[in-house]
Length: 98
Image (spheres, rainbow, N blue to C red):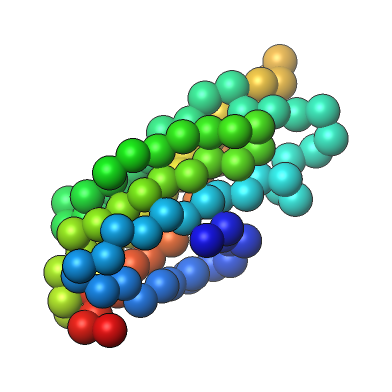
């Protein structure tokens, strides 16, 4: 699932799911600017199974969100500009029995 970030973005996730979310930075970064590095920061109630970057896309696979909990996953990038920028975008995951 590709994520077009918006303030307060939330997804329902079953406690048995292992799902991938892709942060797409294409619309946010100016032409010619890339990602020098990225970090995935997750709250303690979510398991990050793996993550990877491909150009302006950063993907993260998560699992382990307990029913009735609200967890967060943040994608933090640093741009490759001479005056680099650090930017965070966060999604929220609500544990449900789906």
